[in-house]
Image (tube, rainbow, N blue to C red):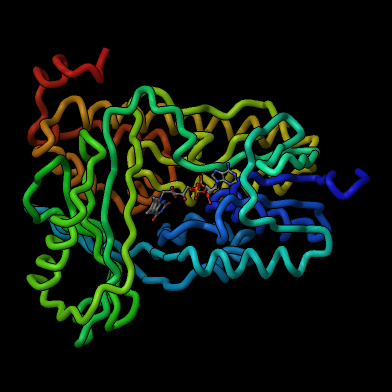
Length: 385
Ligand SMILES: Cc1cc2nc3c(=O)[nH]c(=O)nc-3n(C[C@H](O)[C@H](O)[C@H](O)COP(=O)(O)OP(=O)(O)OC[C@H]3O[C@@H](n4cnc5c(N)ncnc54)[C@H](O)[C@@H]3O)c2cc1C
């Protein structure tokens, strides 16, 4: 390729997906000619992403480990009739760290470039156009502009949350994350608190809902989180940071990857878990397969295998969404998760990673029906045929 506007890869959007993509590509081929275009001034927005550390292969640890700000050896879940500690390593990445590391890696690479405050207005098979009228060409364009680009038909529910990062006056007794504390009033759907103890005197508390609607009543949620903190014995000095999210949960339609350019990645391309909204392991898997192959030979056997596995995972997760939202009243949905957390730890991890085995799938659907299941509700619901 020749010319300063000709690249091996143009990455549209500098969010989680394309940051992992850039790291994987530069780690596999440091001389790759790569351009990343991000609309905002910084990369990765304002998030804390968590993932099960066991989902990161040895090969990827070299470029993932520097992103991790905190790692815990396990986590807890609490339901009205179940408490459990899972000895599965859990890790957190912040937007600030992602921005820092990706800038460093791109800055250190001889033929890579990052343009921030660069809004892309149109994306073609091998070209992109920016709002200032400039154009770039690439052997492979990877479009990952995030959830706002996701087509909204077929959405019956939302995972929505408000998180407050709290500075404490006294150290908290807990140093193990709580992935779900559902021992709270089940208002507005399945509701739970999520608790990440970053330092003895700094915790993230999130009030999370699997709800029918996308609305967040921020004033009441902020107060509710502070009340929960007080009941949990946390002595809050100040709120240091706030994050919120409203992720659409589909029941039928998720964009499925095809062997065509531009390659649509991340949330926009359906590389997320339709039930949990987690996308870290899926974005990483996609990045690794892309990095393993030259840009114009991507759509080969590795790609076909990845897509087949991903589609099977999506189909199953969509079925679970139809059950969760269709066959249970909002206030009964927690029974499904309470039963789910009785399964083997490895099945639970594979569920989050969307890599369930056939035996896992049978295990999840068979056995005692969760309390609250209503055939009448299921039939009346428009989520079932
Ligand atoms: C608050 C929050 C917390 C989450 N926590 C987790 C978690 O713990 N674990 C997990 O696995 N998942 C989590 N998720 C879900 C998922 O991982 C994120 O949504 C993830 O960021 C999706 O990655 P992405 O790259 O597809 O999109 P994004 O990270 O949203 O990135 C898209 C990027 O594209 C840029 N962009 C958009 N339009 C343009 C344009 N026209 N031109 C140029 N750039 C553009 C945006 O500015 C943005 O930086 C969370 C989501 C939210 C909202």
